Image (cartoon, rainbow, N blue to C red; front, side, top):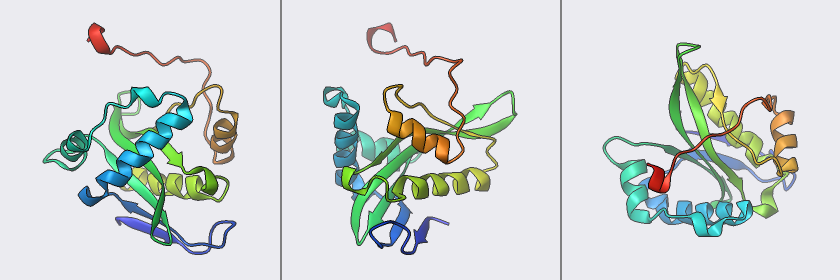
Length: 166
């Protein structure tokens, strides 16, 4: 299954379509990445280019995948993810890198439907879990994730090596 369609599922009475992104969606993906970076308060951190996305998302061996949310043909959100592996579970998993919904569509079930599709993909691929991070200051996001059944884990911290350290 490459898409799901939820009929009249949001407060605006609009149909939400969730589909796999295609190469032709790169300009829209770039726009949503920039909007997500602005929302996160770090617009200067975006180094993605259309050319890099074409290779990394739609090349011979994709490194990540993108789900797009549409209402009436307008793209209003995305979820980006890639596969991981848990040695504890001895199963693959999914790492949700970004979940973003345009401001005017928040609280209209779009994020919930994106997560539903991600859960379907996890089941189809035999995954044991889906992991992601959420900013500690994003109370609205934390509340959303708790409502859909996520466990917020406070006993771990994200670690990163990047830039010159690499």
